[in-house]
Structures are given as structure tokens and as C-alpha cells.
Length: 155
Image (cartoon, rainbow, N blue to C red; front, side, top):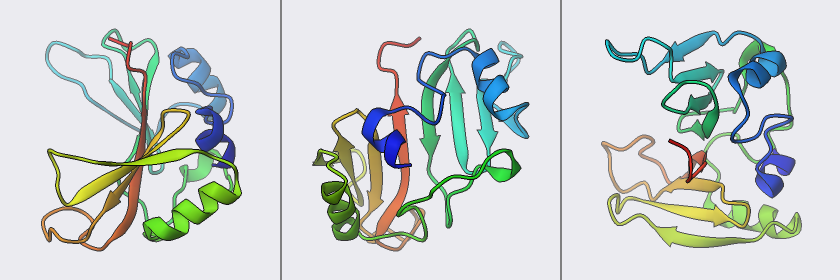
């Protein structure tokens, strides 16, 4: 996770990589989603807690996403250092860890979701935090609940 948060590279997988590259690293996805009557090819490949969203033509990775975890995992396909991705660590702990690792970040409010905020890392990854003030929002406890890394130019 340290290298991902530093560079945006999830192991050998990067935004813009082909689904063939994703498949060669993690194998066939145990869970797929994002299909419709119009788009039969799955637009989301999920390994454990981590989703790889694909471009509209379902050929390239355009988003690496997770919004639910207790102990971040990729399922049986790989093991990795979770770092601080266990439970819902408070932002102060995460900020200390990022500073000690030399990873720059800035805090941003989410105007559309006042019960949450982001730490936007210098590489573009956004760590998502709950304020714990909205019982409808998952989780209803304060702390880190997910991350997203999007290719802003993908279609």
C-alpha cells in the first residue's frame, strides 16, 4: 500500500492498463459488475475489497476503488502490506503515517457529502474519511473507510 499511495501503482497495475494486464496479474475476477442491457461486458472487476473500474469500452482500467473494508484484502489472489488499512483509523493517525513516509497530502471537504472528507495525496489518490455524524452513511463511525484513484481523462 505504501508504494500505491506514493505512486498510484497498485503493484504492477496502473491506470490505463488493459484488462489483459489486469488479468495477467490477478487472474479472472471472482466478482464482476456494471453490466446492463446495453453493455454486456462487465465494467467492474472486483478482487476482495478492491474494485478495478473499466473504461466505457471495458478495455482499460480507469479507476481503482474501495469503499468497504475492515481489514483490506485482495482475496486469495495476492497478499500485501495493508499498512494502516485495518478498521477505521482516525485521520490523525493516517496523517502521521503519511508524513513519516514522506507522502504529501491536503485535506478537502466533500460539499455533496458533509459527513465525509478526503485526504488528496500528491499522486492523485483520495483517501475517504467519515466524520461518523451520519448514521445512514457507511460506516457510521469516524475514520478511514475507503480510497479512490481515477483517471480523469478516461472515458
